[in-house]
Image (tube, rainbow over all chains, first blue to last red; front, side, top):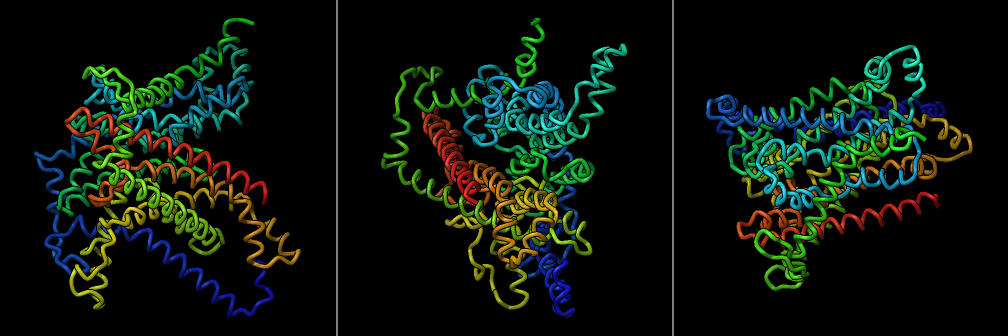
Amino acid sequence: MASISSRAPTSKSLARFLHYCAVAFLIFLLLTPLIAFFFNAFSFRWFYPQLFPKEISLRAWESIVASNSKVPEALLNSTILAVGVTLSSVIIGLPAARALGLYSFRGKRVIEFLIISPTIVPGIAVAMGLNINFIRWGLSGNLLGVGLVHLVPVMPYVVLTLSGVFSNYNPEYEQQARSLGAGMLATFWHVTLPAIFPGIVVASLFAYLISWSQYILTFLIGAGQVITMPVLLFSTASGSNNALTAAMSLVFVAPSILILTLTARYLSGKSSAIGGFGQL
Amino acid sequence: MGFWERWRIPIMLAPTMAVIILLFIGGLTYGTLVSLGWQPIIGRTEISLQAYQNIIFSEQYASVFWQGLLLTIWVSFASTFLSAVLALATALLLRRSFFGKRLATFLYQLNLPVPHVVAAIGILFLFSQSGLISRAGAQIGIFGYPSDFPVLVRDKYGIGIILSFVWKEVPFVGVIVLAVLQSLGVDYEDLARSLGANRWQRFRYVILPLVMPGLLSGSILVFAFTFGSFEVPAILGVRFPRTLTVTAVRFFRNPDLNARTEGMAISIIISIIVFFLVLGYMWLSRRTIRQD
């Protein structure tokens, strides 16, 4: 705002006012779809053309916690999957990220290309191809098989994030710890882990978010047996109970927004993992 | 050279590459074989292009395929273009320092963790004929009945699908652009200004070239995702035309195992199109950036 010194103060404050209006309008546009969920979730007999529901009701919420509700099962399945996928993807991806971040070797670009290629190729082609073999190997219709397929969209972001951390990492500290008598595990725990911790938080965040939001891979490999939150929500949305759909959506997104808020300080827009948001 | 020094890197890469090769490449390869008619389970071991021929040329499926392809291309190009332009505009808006900037930026990013299934439902609540916007219009007397409101979701031009992608992807690309803008500071612009560049020139010759790489890589991800996305067009689409992914999944879910071949063929076609469009786009954008 340094240039305005030459201008009249009124045009400066007008510009500032217009800028505020534009920001407010933008935020309004981005938030209205989210607000619509709250309106619907507590509405009952919300007739046209009422803008606000005249009757407020907890019906939808009651049916979510009712004994015949599938929401608890779906929440449990989604949680098991997301936690399992997050843990295994970080363990699987950590060594590869270290190799890619610290060393240069022949064929590195090919390896990098292969690792990021699942971000470009649509998941349905992969899931359809795996479907038949997973049935044969007993991996169709259970959490293990679905979790394995979730690894495909998750791995690129975990490896990208962690290799970014390792490229600014000095492995000599590990050698110093070793020469002072620390074992391999102690070195990892006290030297490596603290240094790469922010990267692990971001990688885990994306692994969790991608697995938690995954619909089509779960649907194709789960074969209707594995009910997760997105699967349940999708089938509820095909019906006409808007209140229930809205309440379920809120239950579904609340953990993601909470976790993102808690980990936001580790995230910077420059992180290569930010692309993971595009896959949800 | 000892064993560990020699094999260290391959061993470190092995777990990740096992996932990529077995699940990703394995799935794609097997899928390609299925699309070529290879289904040993039902005793079909001959390789042919019959399924592709059926989809592309047969009277039964050709219009489903071509109209679906057209819709898919339209939806993903429109979504990507609008998202990129609006992301740039909104990032420039949020970049200046003003009171409440932190709160505004937080609210701007609030929909990032919202999955596309939920985004599609939100657009439905908002833009359907008895949705929130229609009701707001009715309050001020623009509409008398839901049917007065234009069909914007579950419409044959995919407007609802595009709206929902744009709502989701503007903050996504915007956050990438915003990060680049913040890291630049104002030095370049101050320099340009001291050399007499006006507002438009500073935008066109200073800011735009600097944010272009981030903007392009963000929009590549958006394009690839929207082209292969299933949930949004499944919730907000119509029976005809359907996007290619929705058609592919319908074929694949058909109890008749022969239809799988066609479903698989469509999803392989989707992958090939996305792959080449992304390659072409990267090549073009590299050239553009270099010229700038």
